Image: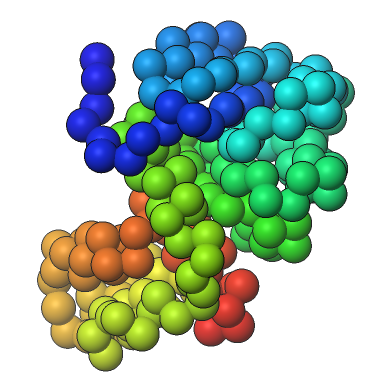
Amino acid sequence: MCYNHSMNYEFLSILIIEDDEKTRDYLRDILSIYFKSVYVAQDGCVGFKLFKEYLPDIVISDIKMPCMDGLEVLKNSKMIKPDTIAIVCTAFSNKEYLMSAIDIKIDGYIVKPIEISVLLDRIKLNISDRSVSNSQKHTILSSREYEVFLDIALGIKPVEIAEKFGIKPKTVGTYRKRILEKMNFSSNADIIAYAIKNNLI
């Protein structure tokens, strides 16, 4: 299956670090369609070894892995090659993990199960925005969208947000969808990370 993306990825190399064999093979097979070189590793130690050998442009890593934690791999990789695009793929949006990821300047968060179109969009966004500050994205939100954005960032449930503003939970979902689209985010994890990074909460 191919996905329609205007960005040309053919000149880029990518490293996938994922301990789940099925997910790893799936990502390798699909991303090989788009990227010049695709390297895969089953754990953090092998992943970091491959990074040092090939210095890929992009690293996609799970967090909890054998041998070396994904965040540690990305931190070490950034120290060697600061312009590496580092993307975390994880099944959880734990605030502690997000704070650690922010400290090492992670470029994106993808929540599992991974959608290839979302992953490619995140890579495209990072390539396009490398020279542009991303700290003002929230200014494009309407006042109500921004209020809902803050509540989501604080972990408030949709039902409680709906009660607060006297709207239906479904409407909160509509606001959330708009916020994600406007800010080029894919999940609540992105909202939380952005809010923390920019001292909005």
